[in-house]
Length: 269
Image 1 (cartoon, rainbow, N blue to C red):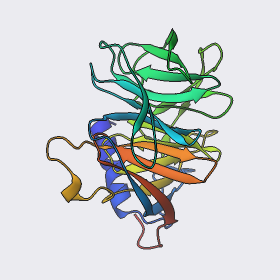
Image 2 (tube, rainbow, N blue to C red):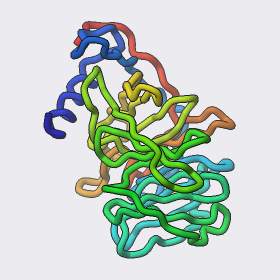
Image 3 (cartoon, rainbow, N blue to C red):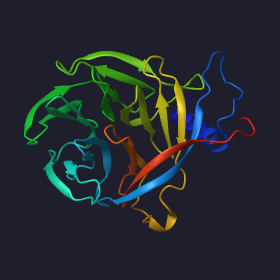
């Protein structure tokens, strides 16, 4: 199945699924719960930030941005959007996902086949490490780094050696789900943006099955989008200390704090 067909099928399922038990595409497939959202608060976001990675560390955002010559690692105040600390990535890399691991912040690059390791406090570069293929999203579960590469699988890395230790296939209703992008570990599950869709999926870290889908259509109103500039939904961050969920997008003017609400049952797919 092509990536275009798969994403199209996923988008159709998102549009018509409602959390009711639907006809499954494959025997034994998991039927995910579908969620609406409620906006709790809105915060300013740098419209010049092509957001690739987003997380909450010590009450502030750690954000990585993309584009050659524009990629950054930043510490950002949540309430104001003020950039508190920043370091530019090398001009020859396209910044991607990031996560804090111990006293380091690890940043992926798109097509360089290399990750960058920074001191978590000073943002001083420490080292690099290699991986196969592309780097997209990155998070951790306290024991392993979890990486996406744009395909239909997740990779696991040892946080100390930065060597790959395993992979997990991601499925939606029993079928491979490609374009897994920005990642966040939330209450024992992996949350992931699906590139070029208005959805975030919840993935079981043991089976790879999508167990939940957050429908974020309409989150950023049309009158707040700049034609030819505002890009796709991307960026999910969890504030574990205060139980707050944040989402944003590439070149978006806002970060949204949201709460999830299961969709009411309706006609099946």
